[in-house]
Length: 161
Image (cartoon, rainbow, N blue to C red; front, top):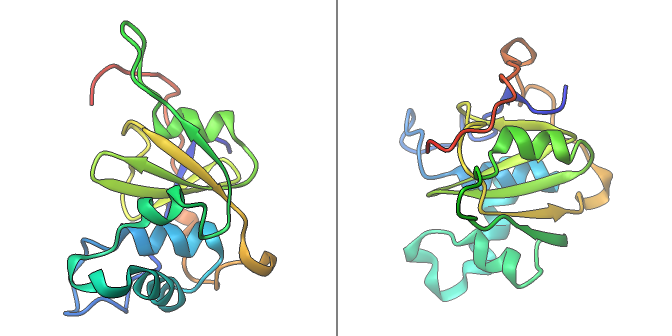
């Protein structure tokens, strides 16, 4: 259902040290939206980062350059007196396609109207979104989504962060 959330953690089992569960949202988003496995997505970002590898990934830089299979960019600037775009509303408005959304200190994947993340980020504001062409039409490996964790949101736009 468009606008819903599905728990997705492509990085489970790959993080070092085990149990570390932060700082890989860019890899998870590219994995889901781009059709990569987690290690493949990490390798793509690592290669693109080049000489700046010690500084962490900057997926937004490569999306802005049109790399990583970008089809189009959508911007959602703040407008006085109007609610910000939330991930749940974005997913309802764009029920088809694969997207990477830029949120405050976070990125998340949306595919065919479903927000995929380790936690429910549907209420967070969306600043920009990039539609991504999935490589070779390949679907993520089974076991990366948990069908039992589908949650529908309330459909409300909120001015609160």
